Image (cartoon, rainbow, N blue to C red; front, side, top):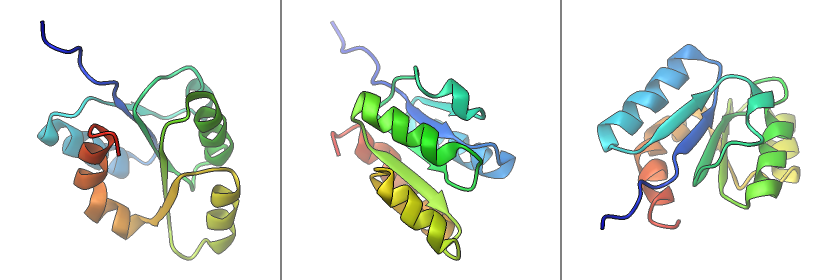
Amino acid sequence: MPDPAPPPVLALCRDLIFASRIAATARALGVPCQILRDPDKLADQRGDLLLVDLNEPGAIEAASAWWQRHSRPVIGFVSHVHAARIAQARDAGITRVMARSGFVEALPELMTGSHRGA
C-alpha cells in the first residue's frame, strides 16, 4: 500500500504575488501546499513546513505559536531592510529568516527539502 501523501507545506501570506509564486512552485514540484491569508487560522493547521511573510501583521506571533505547537520548521521571509522585524522573528523561534529575494531563489529547494526530513 502506498504511503499517504506527506503533510502539506503551509504558507501564511496575504501578498497575492508571493502567494501565487509559492502555489505555482509547489504545483510544479508536485508538493502539497496550502496558502493561508489569516494568521488566526494557522494554529490548528498541520504541515511539514511553514513559510511565512513576516511583513504581515500578526504573522510572527502566529508562526511562533504554530512552531511551539507542532515543532516543525518555520521559514520567514521579509525585506532585508527590516532589521528589527528580523530580530523579532529570530527571538520568536522562527527557524530561518530570509530576505525576500533569497527566499524566491531558494523556494524549490526549501519545499522539496521539507519532505526529505530537512
